[in-house]
Each structure stands twice: as structure tokens, then as C-alpha cells.
Length: 203
Ligand SMILES: N[C@@H](CCC(=O)N[C@@H](CS)C(=O)NCC(=O)O)C(=O)O
Image 1 (cartoon, rainbow, N blue to C red):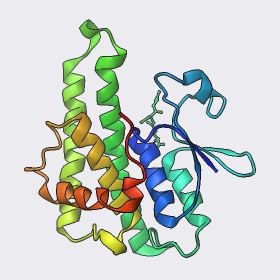
Image 2 (image 1 turned 120 degrees about the vertical axis):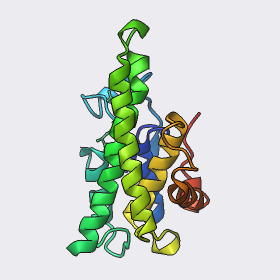
Image 3 (image 1 turned 90 degrees about the horizontal axis):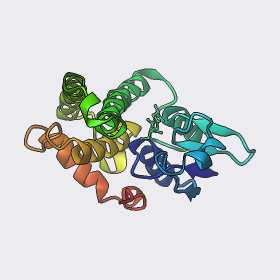
Image 4 (image 1 turned 90 degrees about the vertical axis):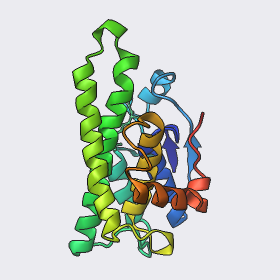
């Protein structure tokens, strides 16, 4: 299998960390949507990453759909139960983080993709409030003990840790460790694990 996209993208990285965690080998095509649009287009005409190219040549898009497929290939995996309340809660916790990441990516693009005079500050502030609200929800999830980490990690542990790292880097004023100590500590623990170490975001 071939994973297209840079680990600097939290969506690509959460797929990569999941694959490392369950031990599925893959080739990594390091292509950037900013610089390698034409190359990415052959895998996804919408020029978005991640894209996963399966052995049979199918191209999958959307990190959640890719991860579901990868986990289905690994019946012994313990990251996501196949049914029930635990599965639902893990998927919801992942969704809070992926929604926050959607907003964080938008906030990152806003000043890059527009001329300075067209950047709309109230829109940016709204995005930051939405990201902040997601982090508040996830700090409560951590306080309830629903991000066990270590050998008991679920897909939510991996996604939240990857997401915290990205938001803390790209919107440090929103993701302050003093305000979200449990998320910061959780991410630091995860980042020390081999699956995370193997997928370091590119500079
Ligand atoms: N919902 C998608 C989000 C993917 C996404 O936003 N990827 C960004 C990179 S971090 C991208 O390809 N952006 C290019 C664009 O939207 O034009 C997923 O979970 O895979």
C-alpha cells in the first residue's frame, strides 16, 4: 500500500501512526498539496491528502475511511471495537479532534491563501473559538479517563495526540499546555512511542 501526503498533515499522520501501530507496512509518497498539486491530482483529482493506494490499485480518500479499511484488514487490532458503545464513543472522540483539525487547517490557510487585506479577522477568531471548544471537550474526555494511552490506546488516543501536536504547533495561543494539561501530557507520552516516532512531521 502507498500513503500519499506529508506527515506534517495531521490527517496523513493519523493514518500513518495507525498503520505503524497495527503493523501494516506501507510506502510513503511525500507529496505536498501546496507544492505538488499536479502529482497529487493523479491520485485524487480534488488535490487533497491523505490518499491511500491499495494493492488492487484502488485509491481511497478521507482519513476516517482509510483508517476503517486498514483496521478491517487487521482483525486482531484493539484500537477500535467492531461494535457497541465503546466504538461509538471512540469514533466521537476522534470526530471532535478531526473537526477541530478541519478548523485548524482553515485557520492556517486563511492568511496564506488570501491577500493580507482580504483576511477577515472575525472569521479567524471564530475558527479559533471552534478549535478551543473542541479542545475543552477533549480535556474533559481525558479527565474522565477515556484516553488511556500506553498499551490500552484506542484510535481516539492516537488521533487526539496527533491533533494536539498539530494545533499546539500551528495555533499555540489556542492550545496552551497550562489550559489543557491532560491533553499536553497525553500527547507527550504518545509522541515518545515507536509508532509516533516513526512518523515525524516534516519541516
Ligand atoms: N477530512 C479530510 C481532511 C483532509 C485535509 O484537510 N487535508 C489537507 C491537508 S492537512 C488538504 O489536503 N488540504 C488541501 C485542500 O484542502 O485544498 C480527512 O480526514 O482526510
